[in-house]
Image 1 (cartoon, rainbow, N blue to C red):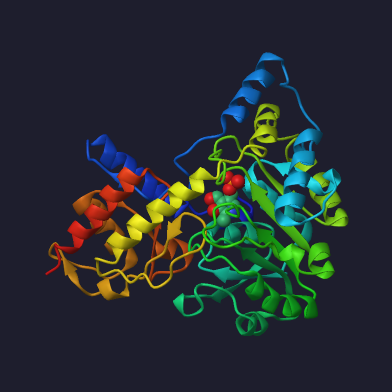
Image 2 (image 1 turned 180 degrees about the vertical axis):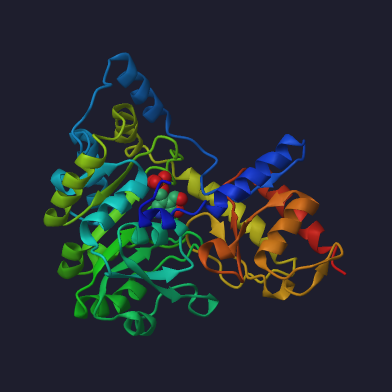
Length: 394
Ligand code: PLP
């Protein structure tokens, strides 16, 4: 009998993958499904990125690279961070990783000891909890809801801090809620973070996808925060490059050194071809994607407001809506009583072919996540199906 490490206890099958299997099987049966569960955009890498990748292949730029990433890419990342975010880093502080996901894992792995507490505002992307547990950390959840617009407040943060607290995990704009912190809101949190000498992991992967608001990185707020924040970002969401697998961390020198050393033992480097693509992509962000996403958001909001779902919070960023389903619970639709977010999503999929994600996947069973990074036509059709579902109420 093989005995596994206790780490494997944290490797439960991702519920998202199970849901995707069900959607795939319905599609195989010929059902017409609109899938608004996926966390990836419907656009692709900039042309300059694919051209650079093709050239990399044709010129045999296909061997190992520096394990922290090729210098021109790290230089371009530094330039982006300086010009767009007002953050000054040297290339030695940047580690290019296999997606933001690995950047995050590297960071946790070099900082967290068994039993350290990581403050995790939730609803949150499920990989945070899994990664924290994999490195022996203990997540300390702060349950957020519509009353604070799914954002951390000074009072909530202060109340969550204990002697074991080491890191605050911040994700703005957030997956799944879209909550995006203003400068003022971050400034209110800063003194508490400093007082308790917390380190911040700031996951800024949706940073370019903000509407009518300026994105502010918490690392810009003070010298302390610059020296104690690790910024995580990547190419998946803003550039539609989920499959290229390029992300990065920007960290204070001492932490960056450890991250680079850790990564060099885990993976030699990110694919050389992908790095060449990313080097060009970062210079060629297409802001029209943001305008298109906003159209989709507006269209879906109009439709949701004609249903019984409760959409009190309009997110300022990301490509998710996170309506509340309490008004639907205990009601009967198509002869079935809805007792949970899972029931609701399942019936919606069965009856009108619309797939959305149950909020319980993110520790928020009163909500559902709807990803609108699709074509406007698909979003309009999704809205129509949502409305038609509710006309089936009894
Ligand atoms: N952080 C958040 C909040 C995410 O939603 C995701 C992807 O879904 C990631 C990080 C990681 O993205 P990637 O590894 O593709 O860069």
